[in-house]
Image (cartoon, rainbow, N blue to C red; front, top):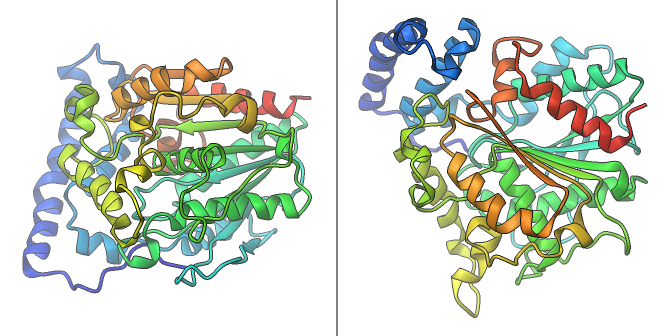
Length: 398
């Protein structure tokens, strides 16, 4: 499987200067302004968060925005390495449980995805998680910690839930180009079904690019991908639907994201990269489809990549044929806020009466997971119990 997108280019002397500037100037300044922010803007909701959480956000913000790409490519661990770190500290008694997903076609690429299990492998009450990372990096320890915490909270209430984490291809190599991630997502679901899971016992979750991948999967289920040689048709057994889907800070618009409102450019508390770098990341993934030769307009693929640009009725069968319940959460201070609101209002809610969008006051991108960058439990996060309760209700809270 492709790793985290390791580049063949070595860092240049300019890259090293950028790192020195980041460490010597930008990080100290960011930490200082974070400490002073409640004094300068005492009424702002984001400043109500604990100091150590805001300091963690500041470090993530500076690193994602200002580390050179050639450096981050080499620094980023693979998903398997992060899973190993997680298991060593948080579930050493269970060890690693990894399912290699089989390939059913060659497609010119020998790519395999994997499922990492948190806790024991189960065939009932399963959360299937697609991690975010901008299609540039794989799952991070903080994401695994969030689901480990959720699993323990549910267990205390008598609810046993298995959590399977999809590790899919990322990076800039041709092996990680669209639509390989969509194919791997279908393989993950097929694998769970082949092991005895029922769709009604599966809730799919994803954050950021992982939520974009969920939208790709649902698009494919309603409108089969036009190139079955790359992504074979995928359908659930007749009369069945997934129990639920939870999208955290979904990435719905990869091209020209400023068009949906001012949040993309102006929400500077967010931990996502600067708006210029974030826009470039979206365009990089979009441009990865250049290897696909199709007998009609490339725009035919746009709805799979950018659901916000799909026809308004694109998800008209979402409720009847795909999923019973939908929850989307966003932060009021995140760059994706406007695109999430527009996509939900135009593309999802009109066709799914049990779809809910919750916007967290003072929240940022991936807010419920960001607590776990620097802690093992929520730091007074008001959205976390709401999300966990919604998912528990989907499984039937004891």
